Amino acid sequence: MKALQGVEGQVVWGQVPSPTCDVGQVRIQVSAAGLNRADLLQKAGLYPPPPGASHVLGLECSGIISEVGPGSSWQVGDRVCALLAGGGMAEEVVVDGRHVLPVPDGLSLAEAAVLPEVYATVWLNLFQLAALKPGEKVLLHAGASGIGSAAIQLCKAFGNPCWVSVGSSERLAYCEALGAQGGVIRGGDLDGLSDLGPFDVILDPVGGNYAELNLKLLASDGRWVLIGLMGGREAKLDLAQVLAKRVQLLGSTLRARDDQFKADLFSDLNQHVWPLFAEGRLSPQLAKSFAIKDAEAAFAELASNRVAGKLVLVIDESLT
Image (cartoon, rainbow, N blue to C red; front, side, top):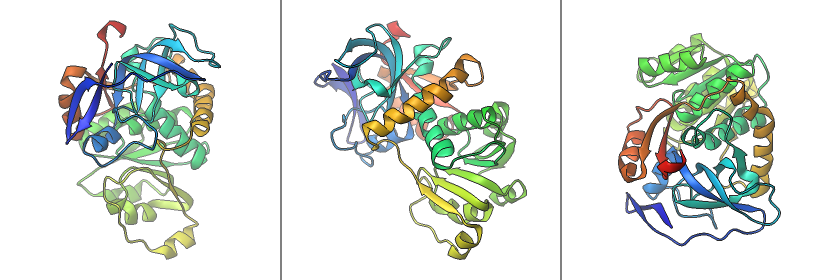
């Protein structure tokens, strides 16, 4: 089969061995694959896949099930989307059947390809780890990103007012249209967030240079969930504020979690989140689609930090 790999900082669409389908797994003929910042890091050689995971790029995909291993309840022909530790940007992928969800009614396969990673990330970090309660206030850094777009919608759906930090006035308007209460523009006065807080939960893909600000913005018993290091890995903190406010700092990653953890997470998504798509309360926020032959352009678009929502690579146009 053909698949996309990062080779010396470039993406290469070439032949790789086709994976075997084992007990509890399903084979998916891939229609489209969502593009995530983790793919940029892996392409650059900075984020290798976990041990045993495919070196093919792609942490989420959609498509049609073409083979079902023993012990799985899926059927050949089912339209699905899947969360992966790697391998999504390929003509086919084999995945644990418990890490697969049906394409929500009314959505195309291209739209479904951008759902698994961001909604799994947001549900895990805001609603499971941070135990977000209705009415609590949330701050989302990089609010117009794929994760931010999903988080705004879920906050609105579950009764949590949220604010954002973003890179432009256009992105702020985009976030407000999705349901954010407001926010500030990065590069301006981030201290303006103090007038909007304090916040009960901060979802932070930036780290480093936002750390001191986050601690200042958190309410008593606030939870700061760190999911990325776009702003660097080192920070200086006043630990007296951590004690005085009883702050919880939660470091979180998803890709390397074990199969059972992801299965439980997907069971939760299926119960609490997926029905909201059919109700029209959530939408995929697909910003732009690229053919697989234009993969380099897609990666450059994501790296530009100008995308509001998600990008997708179309692997098989006949399936979308």
